[in-house]
Amino acid sequence: MTQDEQTPPEVDPLVTQARLRRTRRMRWLREGDMSVGRRLAQIGVLGWILVLPTLAGLFVGRWLDARFEAGIFWSAALLLLGVCIGGWAAWKWMNAE
Image (cartoon, helix red, strand yellow):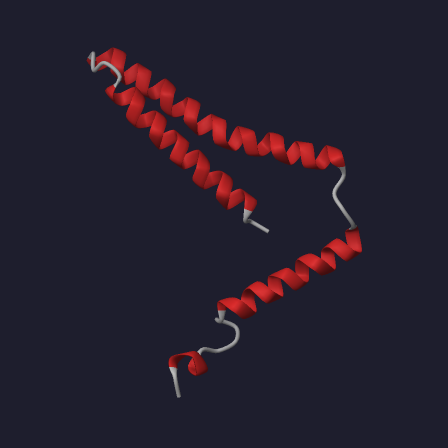
């Protein structure tokens, strides 16, 4: 037996994704499409998920730069960190369902 034949179907990623797609399709058939207002709300939430960590990183970086007279060292580093955290959080939120 190969490794693939020993993997139980519950752990198989293909089976997991197929089940997820089936449940999403069944919910769509039951509930229909989302309203325009709900889609706009989701876009707004997604924007805030990206913007807030970025601005927080920039704010803390500017404060550290002013406190330690470091030029833009902390601002640049924490801005990049905020963008990465915001992107990761947005990705996780979009793939939550």
